Structure formats: C-alpha cells, structure tokens
Length: 356
Image 1 (tube, rainbow, N blue to C red):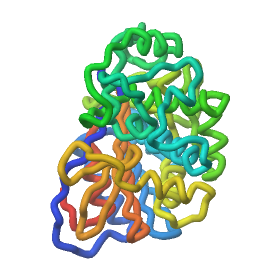
Image 2 (image 1 turned 30 degrees about the vertical axis):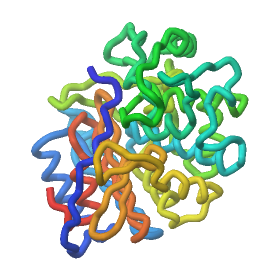
Image 3 (image 1 turned 45 degrees about the vertical axis):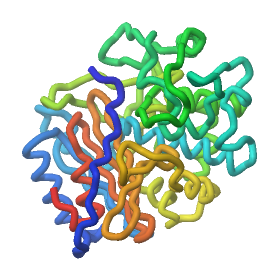
C-alpha cells in the first residue's frame, strides 16, 4: 500500500470561458456525484464555495454493502491536503517574525542538523516547496502494519534517519514530492514553537480559523465521526494514523470545515491568518511542470485567464481534492471514502467550462 498518494495537478490549458456551476446548484451537483459513484467509488461529498455561501452535498453510502446513506457531515481523512495547513503554520510564523522563509531550519530547532549535498543548510522554503532534496519517504520506515504505514514511525526514527542520511541533491535543485519533507516541516515547526506539531497547529491555525470540527489522526486515537475507508475496488481498509510525520497527512474533518478553510484562503472571511494565506498562495519556486509553479504547498495553474490553486490528498481508503479560485471567491472540494481519482470532479465543480 502506498503511503500518502502523491499530489498530482493536471496541466490545464487556457480553456474558453463558459458559465460556471453555481455553488448553490445542489441538484446539478447531486446528479454529477451520483453518476460518478455509480461508476467507481463508494461515497462522495462535494463542497462548493461561492463567496459567503458554502454548499455541501453527499451521495453514495458510508460503507460498501451497507444501505446507510453517506451523510454530508461525515468526517474524512484528507491526506496530503494537510500539507497546506502545515504550510500555513509556517507562513504564520514568518508573518510573526519568528524566522524567515530562507532561514535555516536547523537554526530554529536545537540539536537538528539538516544540510544538502553541498553542505548548505536546508531552509524552511525548501521543505515547503518540495525542493529540499529529501526523498519521498525515509529509508528507515518499516511499519509493523503495512495497512497503517505511518503509525509507528516516531521522533527517534526520524532523528536516526537524519543522522545517517547522506544527501545527494542540492537544495532548490529540483522539485521532488516529499512526505518526509512536510512531516519534518511540521515536526520542526512544533519544536520551534516550544511544543509539538499538534499543539502548534491547533493553537495557531485550527482555533483561529474556527475549525473545531477538525482533528489529527494520531496513534491510538479513535475518531467517532470518521467514516470507514475503502480501496479502489471498494474493499474496506483500516484508517491511517500519524506520529512524527503528522504534518504530511494526518488531518481529518467534514466537508463543511474544509469549506470554511477554503473561504478563509480565498479571503471571503476575515481571520488572523489572512496575511499568512497570502504568503502561501504566492509563487515561491518552480513546480512539477512549466505552467505549475508552487507556492507554500499549493500548486498553481492557469484557468480562463486566472490563477487557481490546488492540492490533492489520498490515503489507503480516502481521496480528496481542493481547488481555490480567489479572484472569483470560489472554491470546490470533493471528498471520497474510497481511494479513487476525484481531482477532475472537483475542478469541474469549480468551473463547468473544464469538462471531465
């Protein structure tokens, strides 16, 4: 089973503008979700933001073989969309003046040595843009339970990896998606704040945004409202839990909470993190493709003369995709309780001129 699925942003051409789906157009959204679930997946929740309005629609079932309908308020693993929250935690620290994006991570975390192949210190911005040179996963990751791969990877394991690691790439040299990099980013931010990632994220991001309906899936923790996940063949699979690499993919939440997060990111609602969001959505480095540079975690893309932002998430039993269109104060997300592709569906809900 692959640990946290690689975020993939399809290259989007500058398509001809067409009337976009209204966020409140629930019947059209329901029909679109119903058609998708009939072909693949188990259940889907769509979130559409248009200004101060958030519409949440659910179709399908909570568990394969069970007639219980999936509720709009169900909680999902959002996987790598967590990385955008970790980036926001970083941006908030920068806005507060605690350190600079191009500052060395090791300078803020006592006892940590983090350098590239040329001996240069790896910077915060390198971790947040997947340009640190660190591999996708640490080489000493050997989960006891392959169905829950991050659960037993602890701080001691991470420090042992960093101590033995021989970097082969210079910082900024190339874009390479790294769950390790973002897990390390979250851990370092927690340490720099004098606590840990969970405490720092809660006090500096989740609480200021009013996201009481959000939690981190930590080892030994059961979240009652979290629905069961399924693989691509609709077979039930265990939930994932994260310890020291929580910053890479540990968040769980319902669609409405993700909608509020999108509203804050698009500047629809005023929050103490407005400036931090702006820093995250600024272009910071080349990304995976010529028209897809990267902000802090967010991938950027052109669409109908505008710039939109995307991040996807995936675990063994869940898939998610979130798109932002700040210029129009719009956003769309799709959450699935099965590991199936939903990026195209979310983009279609953001703008109907983009066809599946």
